[in-house]
Image (cartoon, rainbow, N blue to C red):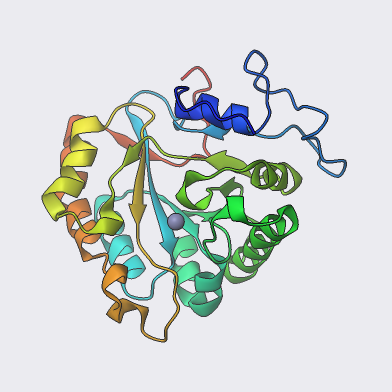
Length: 255
Ligand SMILES: [Zn+2]
């Protein structure tokens, strides 16, 4: 693996994936899996929905406590979002998965157990992604997800090969609110309001890997600041004229 710390993140990823910088869509012989139907996808950092379109994304759910609260705020403002769920949480809280789908939001795959993918053998990376696709299709009542986000943004080559195999688009983010650190409602809202632009993909967290029967009682699982920040900034973004889309919609390929 080439380690070029001076390269921008996207370029480092291409380097890490062994892809040509001149031809980012090309797949080297070593990276090409014989059973993959298409080229390894590039990791998308912006959403394509036309001028003033941006995307809200929520990782690490579903949570039986905070996901419904997030949904209530989104419903109030008529906003659609993408939920990159953990398979383990989806299996534990299938009714929350169904509520997300019924309210018109999009499901994404965020692995089964939120592992550090670079420490896993390729077969286990694939298994993490396949099991999550299966449980989201089963509990969501629809087709498997079309989107994947690697935990921590570590889109290792094995994950990208699995994305090609399962026809998943790899989606990163452009605005990290760091809401999982509970930095304060104002700081979360300001991170969005100060950086929002056409194509922005906002990273939030509505859940936490559930290791106990009552995950909401674990301090790190508290997502109430995220919910409050949404209430604060959503009306302001709407006033500015922003529209909310998801990475699966491509209404304007020129953007
Ligand atoms: Zn995550």
